[in-house]
Length: 137
Image (cartoon, rainbow, N blue to C red; front, side, top):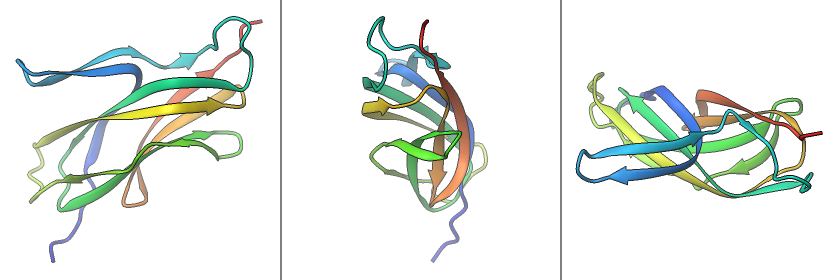
C-alpha cells in the first residue's frame, strides 16, 4: 500500500459562489468572504443559506479524505461541517494542482467575532482561512 502524503494548500477561499467554466477549464470565485454582516435587522443567530469554499492543492500522494469545517475561534466550537470529499493525489508529482469547490449550506452563525474555515486532510489541518462576523450597530 502506497504511503499517503497530504497535499499542500495554496488557497482556501470562503466565498459567495464558485462556478466552473468549461471552455478554459477553470473555477471562477465570486465575492470572497473576509467579513460577514447579517442583513439589516436580522441579528443573531444568522443563517447563511449557501456559501462556498474554493481550495487549491498541490503535491500529496495517495487518496486523501478532506473535510471543510467552520469554527468559532474563541471557543473552537464547531459551527458547520461541509460534506467530506476525497482527492486522489496519485503518485504526488509536486507540481500537479488540484482544485475543488465545496458547497456549505445552511450555515448558522450564533456569535460575532473571528471564525475560521479549516481544511483537514485525514483529520490533520492543511490550511485555515479567517472570517469575521460583525453586527452593524
